[in-house]
Length: 243
Ligand code: NAP
Image (tube, rainbow, N blue to C red; front, side):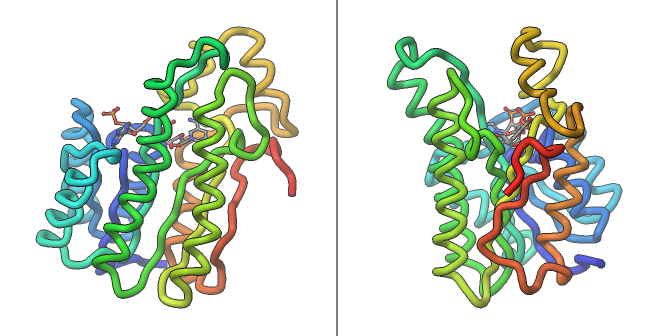
C-alpha cells in the first residue's frame, strides 16, 4: 500500500536498520526526514531517499530536547505535520555490571529511552493522527548478561509503547518491533566472540536477520493494513522469543 503524501520521521536513519526503514518508507512514496548525530554516511542515504521520494536529513542527538524539537520543526516546515515516527536511534554498550560506570549507564538510557520519549512527545505536539513505531530489542525481553543499560532501556521502550498506545488512542497507533540479531555495524557477526556469536545463532532460524526484515514490519505498522493494531510488540527475530 502506498504512503504517498505521508510525512515520516526516522531517528538514527543514516545507516543500519534506520536507513533500511527510511528507504522502505520512501519507496512507498512517504516524504522522509531522518536525523543522526553527525554521521558522514548521512549524505549518501539522503541521496538514495531523494531518488525515491522527497527527503531531508538533520544533525540531531535524540537525547537533546532542543535538538529533537528543532528536527521536528525543520521537518514540519519542509513537509508539513508528521504522520509517522520511527524511534530507531539507539546505542549499545557492553560491560559487566561491576565495571559499568554511571556515565555509561546514563548515556545508553538517554539515547535509547529519553530519545524515544522526546521524539514521541515532539510528534504528539504536532500530529493530529498517525503512527509511532518504536524499535526495541528481543534482549529487552530475554535479558543479556553484561548489557544492563541496553536491556533495561529496551524493556522500558516496550512498556512505554503500551502506555502511549492507551494514552494516544484512537488517533495515534503505537507499536514496537523487537528485532533479534540483525546484521549492522552494531551487531556484526565478524566482530563477535565465538561465545557471543553462538548465543545469537541459537534460534530456530539459526542466522542473523537483515535490516530490510525490520523495514518490512515497519512499513506494515506505518500503513493502513495495521489499522486495528496498537500496543503490540512484534518480534522479528528468527524465533529467539516466542510469546
Ligand atoms: P547502528 O548500525 O549502530 O545504527 C544506529 C543509528 O542510530 C545510526 O544512524 C546512528 O547515527 C544513530 N544514532 C546513534 N546515536 C544517536 C543519537 N544520539 N541521536 C540520533 N541518532 C543516533 O545500529 P542498528 O543495528 O541499525 O540499530 C538500530 C536500532 O535497532 C537501535 O535502536 C538498536 O538498539 C535496535 N536493535 C538492533 C539490533 C541489531 O541486532 N542490530 C537488534 C535489536 C535492536 P551515527 O552513525 O551518527 O552514530
